[in-house]
Length: 314
Ligand SMILES: [Fe+2]
Ligand SMILES: [Fe+2]
Image (cartoon, rainbow, N blue to C red; front, side, top):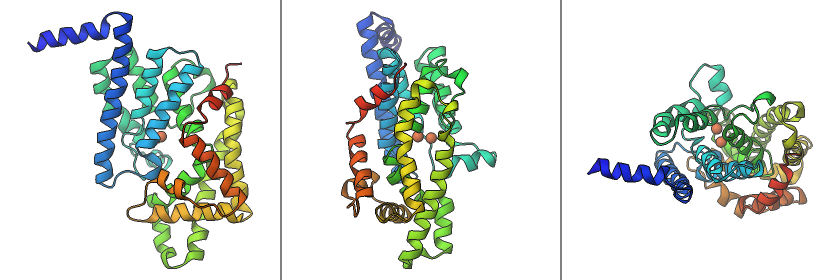
């Protein structure tokens, strides 16, 4: 009986083109349901952070798919990228992965890839599952220029995670809140007793967000390491990070307020949802108003077409 069902399923997966297409849609739906329930459980156990929640992996999946589409990839390739994007941060924790790597600990990239490897191998061909596992395992670092195009799934996940999601206006909100949640900065917050001192809270919010932003901006300022077809798009996204860094350096009122509100929320034992925080954030100046407007457009998916145009092969 069970082998009959298996045979029927196999026909469904390997049958005509229409059926194949439907099975890829089904595969992405299965992955989405899996991540929804896995993250629900992690959330209950207090293991999720605002920066790496279900919304994050869903957006990385959506934009990874958009990238493959912009590169001319068909429905199957788009689905493969979407599934990998959904799974890429399966075991993301509140520890800095650069620090984990430096201390020779297993990073969340490795943990997530190891987790999905046997599951993918059961469902997909060797070639496809290997592409997906590599995309998850290596999503922490940009591919070398000569590697770009060899595994479009990997390119898509890395670019969606690093450029679409982590370089635009949204990063100001996300990073400030994540700094409050990150174990190392929480320790400093306790040492400096920022909880009863709004000025110290403000100082630490700016210090942590600025430090992390400068590190990240430096990594993406050198366009020679980024493929030409991404230049226009990366320039557009990274300019928001430059704006953030410059504003924090000169003590801009609006941006200082933005990072302080989000950082303080991140420090709480049970922070509110990041998207909710952004939605209800009340700008106090032109600078934070511009960040909020662009971020809302991004979260509502209104920038997807613009992004696709910026990511051009020419
Ligand atoms: Fe990650
Ligand atoms: Fe991520």
